[in-house]
Length: 210
Image (tube, rainbow, N blue to C red; front, side, top):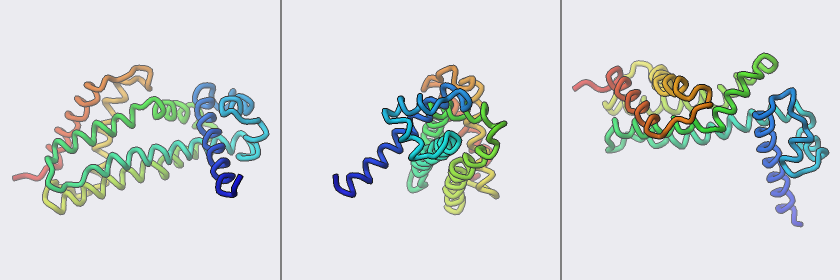
């Protein structure tokens, strides 16, 4: 096998271990999750897991960090739709809101939040990892888009980051209530209704006044 092939195989194996670790940690919790179970889930030897990640705590931390990076990429892809170039702002905000809710209410997202809630007593710093690697960066990206819309006269926001935080709160609050920590699947029609209501409230507060 070439050097490139060997490197690719190592990367693929690391990803398989991370995916398996997330599944097992989310299902069983940190204390009960066994490295042997994770290895079996990933289809690798137990020694291979230790070779890549050293110990269970390091693997857990890497798993959370990788999940944060994945959430960041998915949410940034949604925020990037908000360009402000010749578009119906309300319709675009509703689409962005609906897509952000899809990310927020995805099974993996709920599993991650439940896992963090369960393990935060032992690993309180992981909440900072999620915020610094994902949540804060998504909020900053949305704030940047809102600032541009303010400059172009589409919105009135004295503090775009605060406006971004409030937009997310208008989406996540109702979603939390309906989904019940992810134990109830929220139909697409409900997600759209939440997004529409959020945008309506948001534009009443921050919409440009004629």
